[in-house]
Image (cartoon, rainbow, N blue to C red; front, top):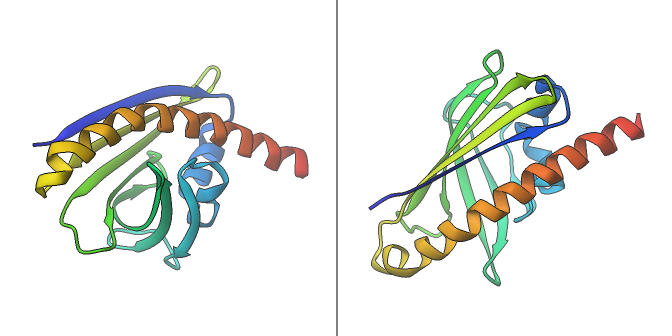
Length: 154
């Protein structure tokens, strides 16, 4: 069983700026609406680099570990695998693609969730799947606000 989703939106900022913020692990809590803080970060982003963040959703908090699968600054493509840091084998694959757009940047976020345990398959994955569409849309709006605030602070 897998759950898939994707959102494409225009962010009114240049594509290189958008990609740089998306891939700045220290800044994830500034725009990703469910990340409360960064627990551990890699020195550089490259395939197999890992980081840990704390997530808060559905009234709970938990650590989530991510590992880079693809990082291409030229093509502005970023993909990683994430899963809870508690030994549960369920995981998600997240892909970000940022392209030039007359309005700034077109950002496509794709997620593939692979619930492996009974309760994740039967209940939690479906609930999270519905919530993710709204959360990703909200995060893209926050991403644009964070970039605008950065420019105003210069």
